View 1 (spheres, helix red, strand yellow):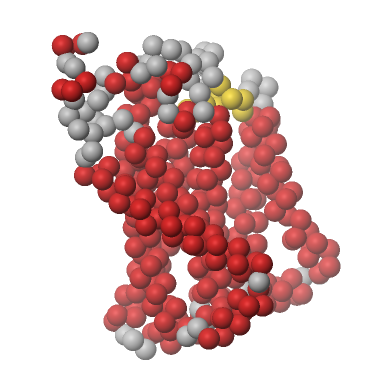
View 2 (cartoon, one colour):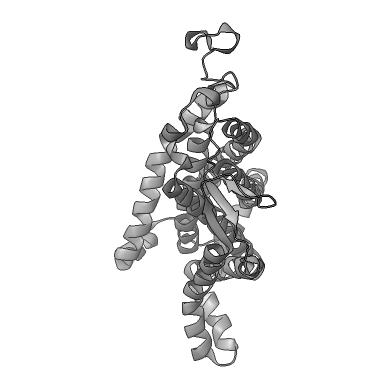
Length: 321
């Protein structure tokens, strides 16, 4: 072994940041399951859910949200920064493996048009997601906007079909623009490996997380500085609207938190740089498999998309209500 070191000579890889990732996962996983269950319950029994809303005081919901949201968002930001900082080391470690096989995605030679279409379809998907969330959070307000516009019936049908159409367009752009790459790329073709995709997802996750964190901290500061502002927030965010925002916010942010914490735990410890050279590529972590890559892209993509939609919805409700 290089340098005469044995496996027992390696320092423990459980650094404080890795312990933090484990501590984040412990409450995040059950909270994610609970938030998904609440969302399913809302859709399966909306009448019973609405009856529960009538009993809930708006002031208490706002106080609870302004405590829960910043705590969750701080955890998301911390894990995103930790992973974005350590992902290059994982990428370098995988690059030193003796095998030339590198799982990931690379551009198709003839997929330039498909990749170019993503510059249009991805912003369109973001816009549609925000519009659909607004229809979920404030349905009466969105109905009023649609009624003012001409050809209301046609617009309503297009509005209902828009998520399927735009999601299909994005999917086609990805399918025809990229190809799974399990071998070393040809000259001039860049491979998007799992760590590289995850790092991009972590950085993009910071955008809605920081925006929502700023809004929640400002709201909490307003209440602490002047309790009378709570009535203003309760008027802008009634119980039903706030709970619907929570049903959209919680699964997205908690899923991102779970993924980021799990990803960070798969990053090789700083004290084991030589380990990748001794690892058999055929027994590498599951995050390098095609299925795990798809789950990773879908999970972080959903977090970014839903987070941006929630951010737009909160701004819309506070400013234009």
